[in-house]
Amino acid sequence: MTDAVADDEMELAEDGDVRKTNKLIPLVAAAALIIGGGAYGWFSGFLPGLLGGGDTSMKAEAEVYEIPAYGAIVALDPIIISLPDQSQIRRRLPRLSVTIALEVKDEMIVHDVMPQLRNDFIEAMRTLDIQTLRAPDGLEALRSVLETRAEGVLGASLEQVLITEFLLL
Image 1 (cartoon, rainbow, N blue to C red):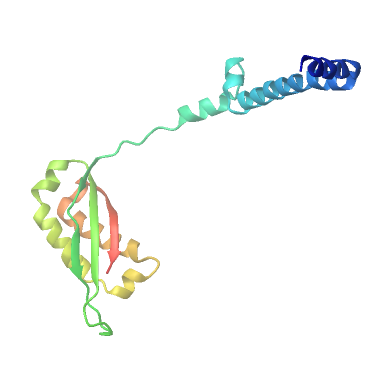
Image 2: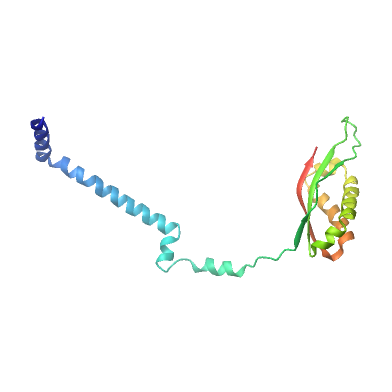
């Protein structure tokens, strides 16, 4: 067996191309890894930051924008109502399920008038028909009606009405 291995080594030593190819493969692989790693470092932003360069306009632009201060957000319990249906095609009335949150300046005011808010919201939603709510701007129509009622109860304390869930059943 040792003679067979020795004969194979002699043939490889005599053939110079095979030996050069075997040495070239690890060099090409190493060069590809170095180039690939450098490209990744450059495009990910790590290498320019490491070298002291980079785009400073992004940093300056990020400093210009300020995060707006929001008021307290108070979530109301879901409201489910039956809607009036003039078509009478369905045997049962369509239902609307809405979850509302209010952004206000003072959270305690909302807790004090919560029953009145829920009552006004239910009355306002009963005035809308199903065709209005199914229209492309139906959600905005609902929000407008709810904001009008909430402003009547909360006054200047109301920032905005948020509809967090809207489902027609």
